[in-house]
Image (cartoon, rainbow, N blue to C red; front, top):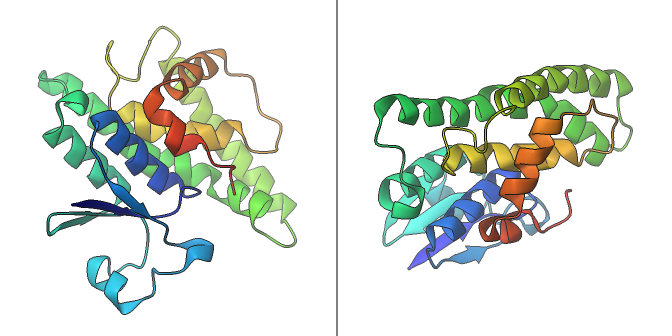
Length: 203
């Protein structure tokens, strides 16, 4: 029995859902977090002491942290296997980490202020958008002559950054046009595995 806890409006849950679908693995998703609650229940806290989503349960095995889930899926599912070449594998790992440490943190304030703040702080939004544009420029430059994030094959780096790009490109704010980023995003977002992950309105 495989179960994924989390709500589809969470960018981190989106990564896990996309990964599971790309891997072709059956699972049950249990809505949790945000308006769904659950994450502060004692039973859930025994699974994930952080009270965050997503959490993956698989035959008694429990794993949280979305990028750890992606790495686990890559290690256990042929469809998402990391490249055999150690340098190419390291580049996949590099971009997965960059999503978590650079791109998503840069846009966090803009997202929260634009979608969830009762009285948006325009200074925070502007600063966050400026930081995010710098990250988007790095991504656009990297993708200028590439089909996927690393080499010619789809990988968990495309999932992690595809979810982040989905949020960035749909923020209700002006952005600098990034043609390579747009082309890549449209390519990966058209995959069947992205449909369930990215189908809910951003909120």
